Image (cartoon, rainbow, N blue to C red):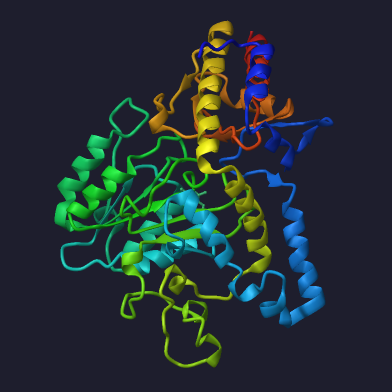
Length: 430
Ligand SMILES: *Cc1c(COP(=O)(O)O)cnc(C)c1O
């Protein structure tokens, strides 16, 4: 498609957009009375308008039924979390029984490592990407320390090449082969939080298994953003937060995938609690743990219903629209945004650089723009003028236009504001 950087052209794209009505189903912050252009869906997704209703329903059931709500609420609380498994399984490409929802992301990765990081003899190393999301670095360092290793020895980081912004798949595969039978676990972010690069999860999972390692993925930036096929890729386990692309609210519950080949095992290493035991006998309060024959065996506590309600509201929207439609719009939107950025770079004689891979299969919704020069000032100008983006040191602005609630006109408008920001910051300098 031949793009044009004009308002009319953007409006035309909006008119043809089959998902355009969904923008109206989300609540936008306002700056000076005007709804913002929201490009921070990779950090905290917007609130769907129907979320309040789901939360109110739980509050009302609690008021009207109190303890009886566990079994007699409209959506009974004791198995409320199961309602999330079917829509989530479609989003991440899993069987519903491979999905559970509990805790938060870092907590879940720790719990999953209890089962899937079992260092023994010379097989004790973990491979991850360099400059992983800090929580993942702390997670891995504390885990290897817990098992009595030095992180400088036990953690092997996949490196980028000098002067390059993204990882090369071949370099990742080579690292896996080099570490070979010393590798106990691969744990990588499926979409890099800084650059938006999408990893070849299928090939990497295969390579990890070929050397006898377990393979887990942190899907914080992948779930609800890119096409996933966790079951078919044979991934051992994965986890994601729900407040980024999944619009479930700040700090909200996390989803987990555990491949079915690990289900129904009594002797697997796992930290356990009463919500992981068989539903049939749970309330007999027996001393023996009888694991659920699915991913719910990893559940510990009774579920936080007030947190699950917004997640369920959001998943029902995902289920109505489907990942394929979202991805179709995402691809066109990100191509258009790339075009707008390049036009603005020329018009404003700027040398900012998109560090996200340019090919569609290697990126999702996020574009990371490296600003050489007046970085932080431009970010501040955007914020003041109603464009919410995300700033990362030393000089990167991350733009993540979520297909649910961003329009093509947003992209055009953003370009105009960005141009003003650049010209203004320059005129102040001289
Ligand atoms: C956002 C994010 C987290 C945050 O985890 P919480 O435990 O939910 O705070 C962890 N890892 C990655 C890669 C993330 O992007």
